[in-house]
Image (tube, rainbow, N blue to C red):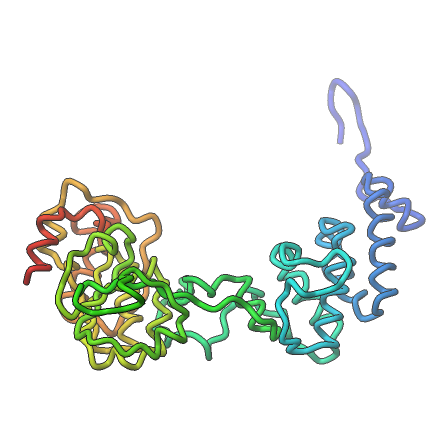
Length: 344
C-alpha cells in the first residue's frame, strides 16, 4: 500500500527454507537442535522405544540434559526388575541415587511408560496416590481435587513412588502421648513414637483418644484419666485407618476452625464414624474474633459426614458471612477456654 512519505512497498507474506537446518538456524536454535539430536540418539541406543518419549517431550529432554540418561537407565531397570523389594538407596546404577530419584520421579515414570510396550505407567500424574491404599474420599467439586489423609510420615510423593514400583520405604510413624500417669508404658515413657503397624495393635487401658493437628496443643494437653493424645499434623491421620481398637474408644478431634479442619474431620469419619469434634463450633469461633485469620485456599468439597451444626459452620466459612475466608487456628484458642472443655 502507498504512503505519502515512503511510497508503495511490499510486505513478505511467507518465508521459504530449503532445509530444516536452515529454518532452525534462522530462529537461532541450531545449538539446541544439535543437542537434542545427540541426547535422543543416546536414548535410542539404550532402547529405541525411548525415541518416542524424546519426540513428544523435546524441551524436557533439553532441560534434563545429561540427567536424561541415568533417568532412562533407572526406567529400564524398573521395567526389567518389577517389585525389586529393596530400598531406592540400594540401586547400583551409575548416577542414580535417592535424591536423583526424588528429583526425577515423573521423568522416570514417563520413560518407563515409553519403554514398556502397551504400558500406561506414568501417563497419569506421577504423584497420584493409589486409591486402594488411602482413606475413602468424599465427593468434591470437579474443580478441586481431593486431599486424602496421607500427607503424614511415610506418605510423601517419594514414598508413593517407592510403593508404586515395589521398593521398600521407611514405615509410617505415629506419635502419641499417654495422658494418664497411672498407665505404665516403656519404663515410664509417655511421649511415644511407633510404626503405624505397631499402633494398630496397641492394647492400652484407655477409653478416650484426643487427636489434634497442632504440636503445641498435643504437648500441652494435661493429665486425663484413661486418655491418649494423638498428633496428626494436618492431613497426617492415616495411622487411624487400620487401628481397629479405636472403635471401642471415644475419639475426639480438635482441629482448626476452617474448611480444611472440617474436611479432615469428614475424612476421619470415613474410617471411624463415631469421631466427635471438640472446640470446632460457632461459640468458640465468635469468642475468638480478635485472632481470626484468613484461610489462603478454602475447600469447596461437598462433605457428607458432618453433623448439622458442623455443616452449617462449614458452609458459613465457605460463604463468608463472618468475613473473607475466616479461620481460627486451634493454637490461638485461649487456653482457659480449652481447659474448661478439657475439665468437662
